[in-house]
Image 1: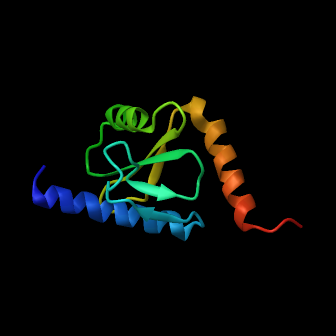
Image 2: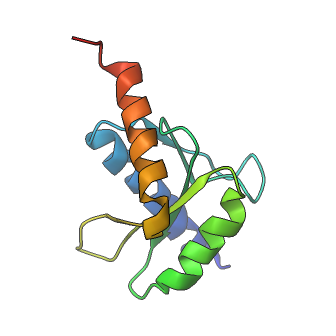
Amino acid sequence: MGLRSRRKGQRGEREAAEALAAIGVAARRTGQTCGTDAPDVETALPGVHVEVKRCERLNLSQALGQATRDAGPCRTPIVVHRANGKPWMVTLRLSDLPRLARAVVEALAAIVPPL
């Protein structure tokens, strides 16, 4: 991977972390310091593995396959992606939606005091 491509990826990971934080999900770029199976962005969503893709033409099947391999059996893989001038989107397997929903509820319960 070339330097420009790597920098664009790093920028995309920072942008994705900022976009997640803007909607109330604490997030930070990991910089892959934990190894190749580390998520691109670490979030407050328990058990969720975030793969970030910032490109014009994205093969979602490949991206989700990479996220799934890196996530392992215990984490829910999601792909956070966007093209130039487009909004951030999230892609996941439909079968993983309940696990993601539970992670969101857990994360909210940790920051929102009960009524």
